[in-house]
Length: 170
Ligand code: ZN
Image (cartoon, rainbow, N blue to C red):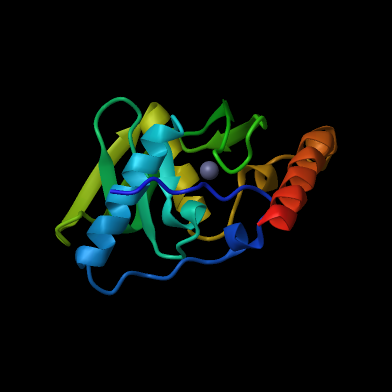
């Protein structure tokens, strides 16, 4: 297992659409291990592979009910609607209200490549929806109204500045 660095906004890699995994190989299992270690180290409750710069459809989630790793996850059913304040490891210091389905059924492959169906609600459902959006390059800042986004601008500018400074260094 290796700890990876989480990519931060506005790194363009976060806008990529991640690719389907053709086979759940050793490489994918080791990616899942790295993602898990990174998620825990950053004290996150979920992580998508793209957040460590790997454009593959793999996510890990642990909202305190145990680790769930999913390959090629898709939502097959969703129900209800609930708004809650949400953050993202790629947007440190940014919290926004996001409306999401209250319950979701997600289908995908586990780390052995076997099909699993997960029924989730509450925070678990929210985390799954959040990570799934990362696979299509969607971030929580895209989910807020324009007025709220203007309020966010200073926080986002600060991140952009830090990103530029870090890029110069490396
Ligand atoms: Zn996120």
